[in-house]
Each structure stands twice: as C-alpha cells, then as structure tokens.
Image (cartoon, rainbow, N blue to C red; front, side):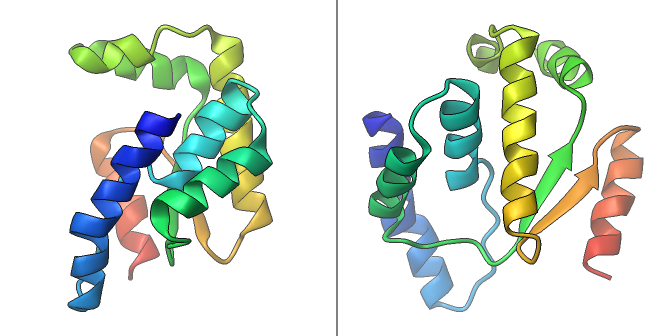
Length: 137
C-alpha cells in the first residue's frame, strides 16, 4: 500500500497538481477511490487508514467528478482476461473479491452522489462512449 501511495504522491506532485495549476482538465484512471474499492472493500483493509493514506499521498486533492463504469463482475473479469498482458496479475482474484470491489464502488458512489456518475458499462465500446458523451452534453 505504501508503494502505491508513494507512486500516487509523485504523480500528484509532478503531473496532476502542475496541470491543475495551469487550469487544465485532468483525467485520471484509478485514483483514490480505486484504493478504497480494491484494498478496503475487496481486501477488507481498514477504510479509515486507507483514507488517511490517500489524503497524505494526494495532499487531500479530490476529484470534482468521478465516472464509475459499472459492470457485473463476471463480464468485467472476462473482458480483463480478454485484454491479456501484464494487468492479468491483478485479475487473479475470485468472483467474491470482485463482487466486494463492485459493491464498494457503488457504496462510494452512493455516499457522494454529486461527485459520482455511474455509467452502465455493458454493451459495446460505442454504447458506453455514447453514455459518457451524454454526461458532458
């Protein structure tokens, strides 16, 4: 966890914060909510400690908007395995783990409905892309 936090801290300091200071829009995949969902809900680590670690790593920098691409765990895992490559080392957990992760993400979204937009990620890339476009229309 500390290595993930240190990497996130470096990314915030060297990339995200400077871009924000210049008025740029920053898109980030798997920010602090991912830590809470995967480590907290998925691996059952203490959420308060993870939040404190996230706050340290980011200087309490939180996103204005979070797009949560929601998909049942069976389909999500099948898609991840279909991509191949190095990310598969993170996809070796069983379905109960991914069910906890998904439920965790949905709980986070329910706790901050003004920040989160839950997007149905079933269907084709084009279908999901259309749903994302509608968020920003």
